[in-house]
Amino acid sequence: MNDRLLLLSAVCAISLSDQALAEAREGGPESVDVLIAEQRREKQSWWDQNLLAPYDTWKKGVAERTGFSWGSDYSAQYFTATDSMGDSSASAGMFRLYGSWDLLNRGEKNAGGLRFKVEHRHSYTGTTPSGYQLNLGSAGVMGGPFNDDGVRLTNLYWRQQFGDQLVGYLGFLDVTDVVDVYGLGSPWTAFSNLSFSTGSSSMALPNDAAPGAYLGGWLSENFYLSGGLVSLNSDPKDPGKSLERAFDDAGFFKFVEFGWTSSKDRFYFDNVHLTLWSVDEITDTATPDGWGVNVSSSFWVDDCYMPFFRAGYADDGGSLLETSLNAGVAWNPRKDDLFGIAANWGRPNADTFGPGLDDQYGMEIFYRAQVTENLRITPSLQLLADPALDQDEDFVAVFGMRGVLSF
Image 1: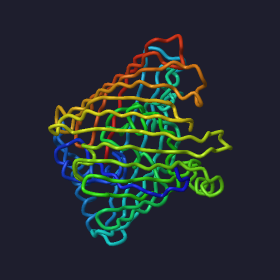
Image 2 (image 1 turned 90 degrees about the vertical axis):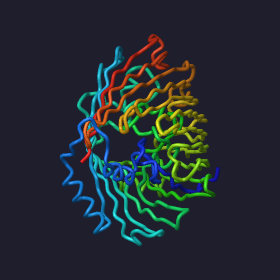
Image 3 (image 1 turned 180 degrees about the vertical axis):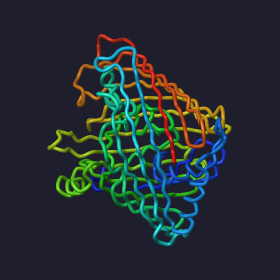
């Protein structure tokens, strides 16, 4: 793979709801444009009254007049397990502010503008959710974004359209917005375990706010090509240092993705893709070079069920798993409620955890309830069998609760 490959990506994302099916959106479930569009969309909740309706109307008016749109949310994640080698529970919270400002050719095919997302991540307990799975003796991550970083940048980039077929990004990027994307990949709205999210725990993902670029688009009505190049040395808490490292250390995460969808407006639902990635060696952090391949297949059946199959393989690179296979299904019992169940088989990466570890197995079940227009609550259960890092433990059950309040 060319170490400076700059083929890049425009991926569409649509929420699991009937109204959103007609909207072709760009980026993963947690990308700025998708988050803002989701806040604007009227939802079916258990309590229909929207107390923030005047505020939402005012924000929409500002966007129409100036091209500046924004949103924010507060989320919290809690886990507790039947057995742990460390703390018995973990919890953390996060405030996010995100926005877009269309400054060039607003409303036209060659529009350009800024996208940003800043966060404050904070822990309620000694162990954060992002590190909790390792405490359970399992080679993996659950609740990955919920850590104790404090104030941090997630992305800040210029987005440029080139007609109907092509789009490019340049700036500080969150690569999970554009690589190996599928409809259930968000730890805020779907599965919390990374094995069922971007890269299936077998991709050596860089940190957020990584200096880089993306470019990509449609080859035809059904096929697309995307790719990217971002720095491996990013520090979301110090973007200036990230930029300096990108030029000095020249260590990069690269990917190229080729995919098929039944139609452009079904990209996020009916999608089959193949992703190739590689990472450079970083001597300062003892990160080995490596490469890998991921495949994904998901289909939205009768606008109600989404079965999926995803797999990944890594050759070195510092990933959590060397090989990962997972399959599952999501179902909309109500328009904006979501039930999901999935199972994973994984082989830990020997370069990351050492040789001689056994394979491990996992399952996650969740139910996301849209309580009000602005509040979602998601209880979950994870079952970890034969955790690879604790040879004395056969089985661990993890109970979780997640809440997201948007405003």
